[in-house]
Length: 177
Image (cartoon, rainbow, N blue to C red; front, top):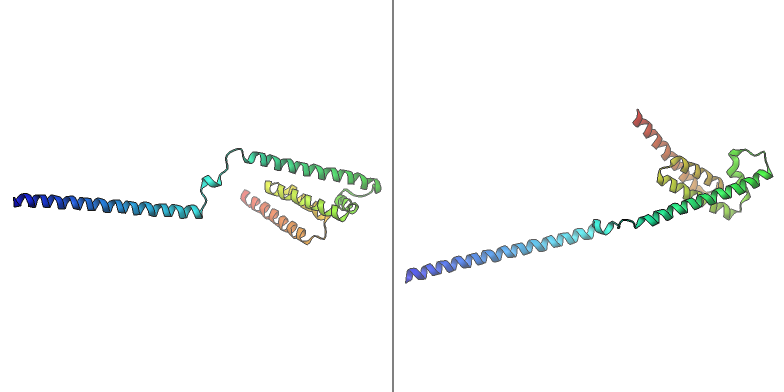
């Protein structure tokens, strides 16, 4: 009987040991799961997920179309203003040279109109610059400067833009060599 009791005690001890090991394994897994969840939470707080930053397809299309429409409308309005003022200036003094077109047009406008026209040219120049049309942007900055010649900030921006375009051209030439 002692052998049976010893055998039963041994089996019970083995079962308890297995139960204890199972409990420890479950606790370890639970601790790992909690740590992983905490880490994921921290990552989610520090860097937005792709899902939260990406937009469904088609959402930006109307905005881009509207932006293009506004650019086209602004360009058309500026050209119409130039045409009207050029005709007016040409009728006043038909001997003026083409190179002084913006200066002569700016002379006819009120200070508020000059400022608005200058802003419109700067806005259009920025849009062209973002599109990579640097030559057109440069021309638009030059025109803006003709309407607001005393604007120091515009002159600084124009000079920096000219330098930027020059460096881009220089870099492009180096690549071709």
